Image (cartoon, rainbow, N blue to C red; front, side, top):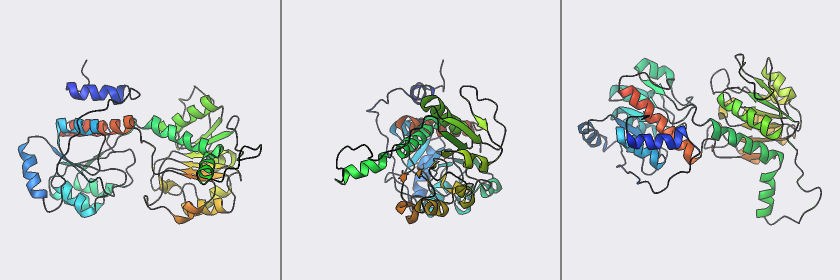
Length: 371
């Protein structure tokens, strides 16, 4: 039975959403569209209107299959240079298109939203789960709908969290740097001794889809004990033992490794602050694949430099791509450039989720993933 009503989209849907682990098929024809600037926007807008399809301004390049799927249903304008766009460029793009598809790195403020609302813009179809870069007050005031792409990136992000845990516990980053620097002097019994995960306690802050996926991998794959904090009661975990604690402080005190999986909001801003970091074991690890805002990075860098923590594995940062120099200089860290969802299968599925949401919206149906 057709999933989407279109044979092409059906094939891509099955490959990346129904069965995201199937081998990516290379050789798909890449589709390119003229780059749009504020100066050329009016001409592009005229061309798009004559096509009879809604137009979407895409701020960064997508995997080829996702771009091709988008082009089946919409008239997209892609950022050919794949560079960060200025607020003025995004405002002009949103104003001259029916929708904008930003990424988590694009700050969609009131100026961009107002420009869109005063022009053609009706939908912000976010490529990603996190939406703390979007001014929701301005969107609501302007009557602009917002969607995101949850669900499809759970496994990839959970895998990366385990990657960070393993790299820290086995000191893999240190070993790789030592080897490349030509400083390895050969095998010896006490060289770069790490710590086993079996029997250790993993503490999780935020037991949503990704938190549960990390817990399952840690418990069933590595024999770790699981404790967690979540604002609401969690009663659907049966595949492995997991104990819900009443507050963040209790998790910090017990955990040998603390992994954050909460959404960025006013309530979770710096949820891991200096006071809570001080409660942790001196050899404990901090893992963050959520959002940079949930950790006080200044306090974390200070704790690491003072050897009050065993290490930190971070995939997200406040103000990224600009990284706090104190974090870069801190010892016992593994720092990655926001790779949580960075697999071909997942990033393609995220693009298809944007297509599904935008298709529903412009068909007059409810968004699949409203925010």
